[in-house]
Length: 222
Image (tube, rainbow, N blue to C red; front, side, top):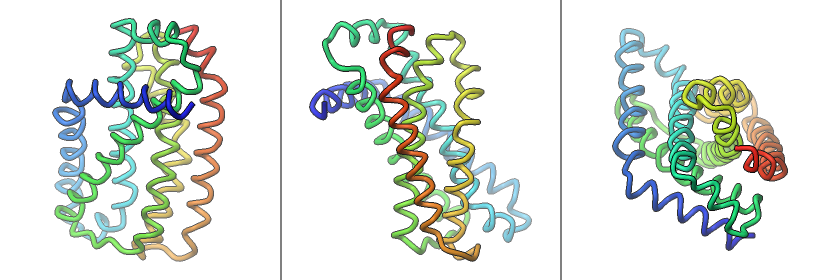
C-alpha cells in the first residue's frame, strides 16, 4: 500500500511541477491575500497581530480549495480516474497517495506564507514545537478531507462552486482549533496549546479513516 501510494503521490507531484499551477497561480493568490489583509488592517497593528493565526489558516484553506479543484479537474477532464480504476491499485492506496501529494503542496505553501507574514505582519514566531505540531496535524486533516471531497465534486459536477460549499464547512473545526493553538503558541492567548493539537489529531484520524473507507465507492461513481 505504501509503495502504491508513493506512485500516485509522485504522479500528482510531477503533474503539478510540469503545469506550474501551484507556483504560478495558487502561491501568488495566497501571498496576495496576506498582502491585502495587511493593507486592510494596517491602521490598527494590534488587530493585525491578534488576527495573525486566523488569517494564516483562512488563506491556507482558500488555497487548499484551489489546489484540490485543480488536481481533480485535470483528472476528470483527461480520464485519469478511469485509468487509476483499471490500474489494479487499491482505492485506499490511491487516496493516501493523493493525500500525500496535497500535503506536500500545502506544506510548501505554508512555509511561503510564514515568511510573508513574518515580513508584512512583523510576526515573531515562538513556541516552535507547538506551532509545528499544530501545523502538521491541521494540514494533514485538510489534505485528508480535500482528497475525499475532490472526488465528490467530480461526481456531482460543478466542482468550482460545489467544492468550497462542501469542504469549507467541514474544515471549520480545523480552522478554529488551529487558530486557537497558534494564538497560544504566539503568546496572544492563555491556556495550554497541546489539547488543541490533540483535537486536530482526532480530526485528522477521522478524516483519513473515512476517506480511505469511502474512496472506493466515491471513485467508482465519479
